[in-house]
Image 1 (tube, rainbow, N blue to C red):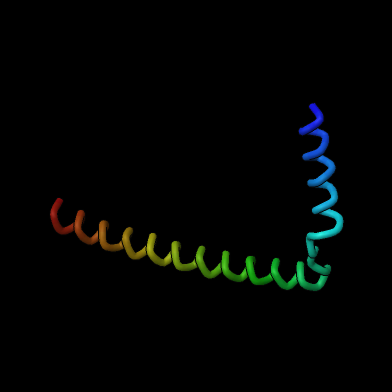
Image 2: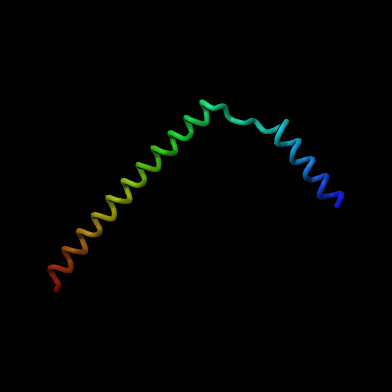
Length: 64
C-alpha cells in the first residue's frame, strides 16, 4: 500500500512541478491546426469516395 501512495505523490509532484503546460494561446493555435488538418483529410476521403463511386457506377452500367 505504501508503494501506491508513494506513486501517487510522485505523480502529483511531476504534474505540478515538471510538466510544462501550454498557454491558452498555444492551445488555441494547436486546436486550429488540428481542425484544419481534419477538414483537409475529410475532403480527401470524400473525393476518394466519390471517385470510387463514379468508377463503380461506370463499371456496373457497362457490364450489367
